[in-house]
Image (cartoon, rainbow, N blue to C red; front, side):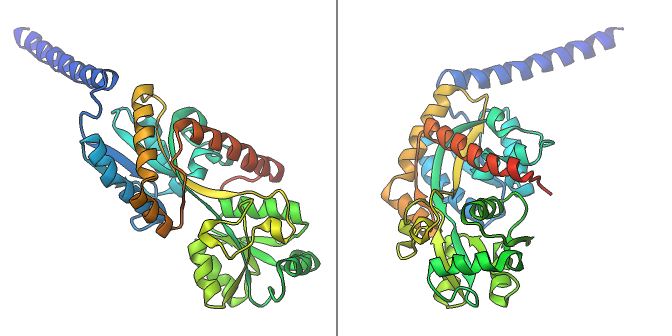
Length: 330
């Protein structure tokens, strides 16, 4: 009996110690003593990917600003949603996520079974960079002006096809939006990734696609593909020589990809606001601006409210395409 009481007492003391530690950590966050330990920056894509490069470029200056190490961790899978789910459920007060727009807008609409809701479970911190996609076509079919291309595409009907990195990606939803605005009807063919899509156009298996600027322009400069227009409402400084789609007759088209920093919804407002200020200042610094530009990003560096507004607008735009097309993630 005495031995049993001793064991219960030991367990009680341990539990109290754990509770005290957790409370002390929460108090540190609430009292402004944040960060009290290294900060983790979670990325849902592999090393060397665009989100990973952005996260690693951000980590060093953010670490200096915070006075604590910022450690980039890659949790790969499900188009970044595994990482986003991890961030949404983090309870240590020191976990952030570097995410792409799909993870923070339409993820739950595409997959209702998803275990996190980006609009309810993530707290916007700062929009980092934005970039248009490039409507790119096979050199075999893009033989005239941009207007000529759309005439040919309308005449081709469903005999043409377009490629994307998968159902529900921005490349897919953007093409469905373009079809509705331009009265073209190419058939969707999903591929494992953007490089394979570009290869498909070069080989003649595909006629068109929305590609990231760096990939598109490398093939355009080699003469293997032709850039028809960028998906932003005006020309992009990343591709000053490429017209916007509005310039070639497709009005009201404005679609960009972007990346951003988010936190769990439970992060205290004071901490989130401090992070937002620090990160936006870092992103807009000359050194970081140059690094992001080289990665293919136009610098944003917004407040948390600015990111929240962008999330709302893109969720409405892309969500409408999902609902009309009854699109579900595969």
